[in-house]
Length: 268
Image (cartoon, rainbow, N blue to C red):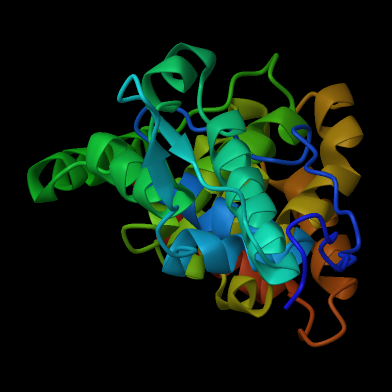
């Protein structure tokens, strides 16, 4: 039998630092998106911690001293020591992902699995609050507006964050998302946006492709003085779809038909 003073064998686990810069901190009303991102973060940086959060690490043995104070019993095996280290690291990771004002409140929870469940109960909301969140996000989507001073890049980043939040509740279709972004652009984009929204060839692009192509023409849009005719828009659109390898080019009849169909139409 091994003596009481015999040292435990060492199990070496490759150290994996928890970067708070990459980790998503929980924000009000964004629990579902936060929980998805935390799962992705942990499974990619240290899957062992995610397993501890999901399954627990077993109860921690405790004893009471003469004064009735409980103390943890130190692990007696290398495996037990490693499990205790993972437990503490998993709990610390979750605490670091909480806003500062909540860390002290949740610090007393003993293990990572219980902490994860408590965070869900506190911030996850019930069916009614989730429905309200979905309605608010839908309203933001439908009322999206891009100002002349915001710029295409910032507007697209804002739109992408909104789409990410909507995906939790059921994202709009790619067609609806692209059409809504085009509707939200400033009046200086109106001729081009109108042509693009009403052409079936828009379906060949994904949302990022749409942004990347629009970004090419932003400087021209800002520097041009668009008249009531669509001559400038026609020129840009011919160039736009000519760059799409899988899409046939628009011809003059396409553009004339769109102009005729959309005269007097009010945007929704």
